[in-house]
Length: 130
Image 1 (spheres, helix red, strand yellow):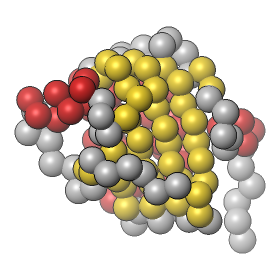
Image 2 (cartoon, one colour; image 1 turned 135 degrees about the vertical axis):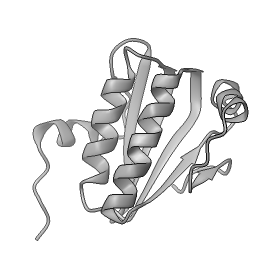
Image 3 (spheres, helix red, strand yellow; image 1 turned 90 degrees about the vertical axis):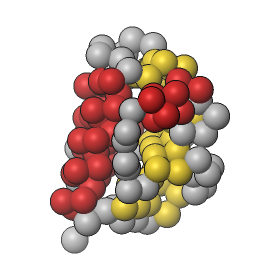
Image 4 (cartoon, helix red, strand yellow; image 1 turned 60 degrees about the vertical axis):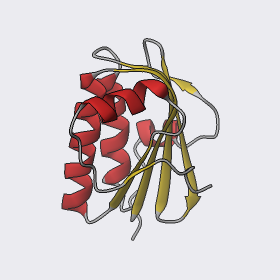
């Protein structure tokens, strides 16, 4: 039995960009039945990280096997964004899902990953699955 999406989930399963508040936009794609791609553009900071948390948590809890977080369009990435990714990794581990973080060409994300000793299981610089 597949759970019915909540209205917030239905709103986010889209190919259009959604303004998530502040200077961040999200787009959620389902390239395969048990795969979800969350594309993020703009700034991930204290004011936008909470919305990113909500989206990632709802997606990881929606019975998926693979979650790809595409950060290639991120122009600013704070410690609040890093905390969102760490929480997503813990939730994915608990749910038995594989989490991939794609920094792409985002200098902001790469800089923070270089400066801090972060060891995500699925950090990748490859393009996400489409």
